[in-house]
Length: 290
Image (cartoon, rainbow, N blue to C red; front, side):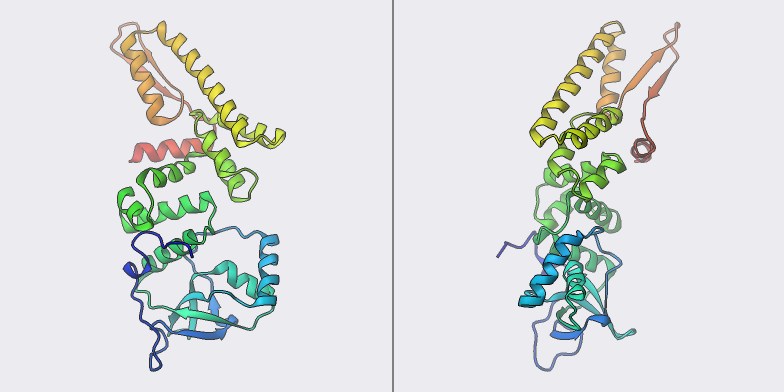
């Protein structure tokens, strides 16, 4: 059994051990109608592979559900909301099950359910890298917690969480390619080696067209970045060293090409920040808002 992440679920929601005289929503293992279970509106996972769902449905049909779904009870609707297990629930529906085994746990808030659902999915490695990053981002915004606190909660290093969040700097098209399995997380991380969005997209197209491996993508990204750096250095030599240094610092901070244009009086000028698509523009806008 895989070791639990971080502080564990018990630190996030209250869980009661099953007892014969327990009430309906205090941690009871029970069998309920599938139609009484609704998906969570906080679900981090957005994409479900139809082929893998069919395979899981066939397994459930033959061997049954190996692990109960995790739910909370809604007394007003007399129904259950998923905390974790939507993929298994969908497979159960495909398998034609009318009833499934669930573990009902008391969850005090939407934030509790979201945190538990994310951790459950991470423990089972059910999320792709972009879904994981989006889950982290949402938790940080809604919990108002730092990357350090989040890393501690999910049992990962701060650098691991930070590197996953960086994937959201990629264009929407590239993020979707990761979500739908067109490219791997390794490909996506290699693309982050190239600061300019236009160059990233060019390499991304090559990955798809030539079916480049992660290693080949890394090599191409290094070559591209190296060539860009040499060109930038050549241009910088023609400028005032202080201005060239400022440009380099802005490029590193923003992850895109930046040019400082000084007027002849050397007292006025412009800072030109390049973006190559609307997603890149939005990313830069968010950076400045921070």
